[in-house]
Image 1 (cartoon, rainbow over the protein chains, first blue to last red):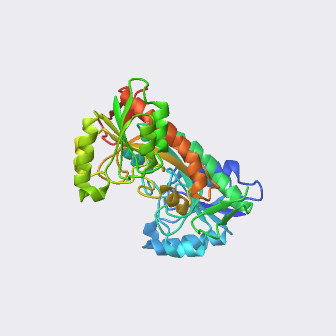
Image 2 (cartoon, helix red, strand yellow; image 1 turned 135 degrees about the vertical axis):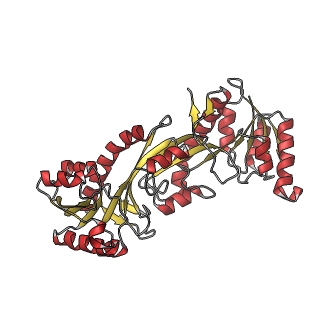
Image 3 (cartoon, rainbow over the protein chains, first blue to last red; image 1 turned 60 degrees about the horizontal axis):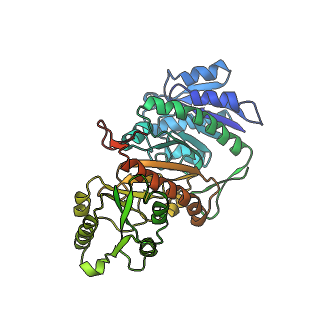
Length: 202
Length: 202
């Protein structure tokens, strides 16, 4: 399975995918795209010889046009699964239709709690005692698609975004590659009785 | 500390409190109230000689009047902490003002996800992979008060309310007594920087 990664920042989840699934079990990371010209994720891709390209909004006028160009480029690289790894833009409906059911995202909260930006801040502000990570299919809503994998961590005394992020990052780096492996191996399907429920046959 | 329990149904959380904190560490369960005349919780109270009383809405005309009568009865029993254990009614603002910051509830979800009725059904419908239990202070919203304790359980293959309830019930029976013990021992305070954050000093 040929996968592509979209990232806006550091690219630590991209690195986890490069380290843990790229080149194994018939999985190849074939393309990295970003909305941010300076994203460190692009460097990480170049460092291992993975094709990369940047699609800043300014260059295309609007999101739909940018996403059309990006989708065309990704399809040209043969991408079969699109993995959002710290990609900070909402994808347009046209993009999602083109890769229907083949876009996943990792989010630093136990969805449906704390969707959107600054999830860890939201959770700390609320005063939760359990934090977590969700990998989900992407639909047109904000972090609202069907859940693939979730893992929780009890941090009853957590006070700062940094200490929570430090605990969640290794979980993200484990769950996202796991989700890619499961999809690539054909273990993932949608429950016939509930389209929200993702069934995983391990 | 003298505690009172409000319950609408079976009273298994009441039983956990009777078994695990009643008569220990200076904690006495002094009153059980219900909105439902037939609630099994009332029997459990009688069986161990704890005062009980029933406050059906029909007898009082409206919720505010019912809650006034109930608050007066509870205060008369010397209740210092009110524990909702499967109490299916929303408490009126007057009741909450009278026991300000001294009402707690147990909820079978990781709040703020899935507040209100049928929390487990809501979670299954959403398709979550992590379920859990929250003990929280009660405010005027629906399951919206500050979180005292939370515990998560990963049930990625859960399909039915029964199997999830079976896993959450023992967690409720542990967390609710633990919350009562912590409050009674003076270990619980509100963070001066964030009134949503409950600090527990163990």
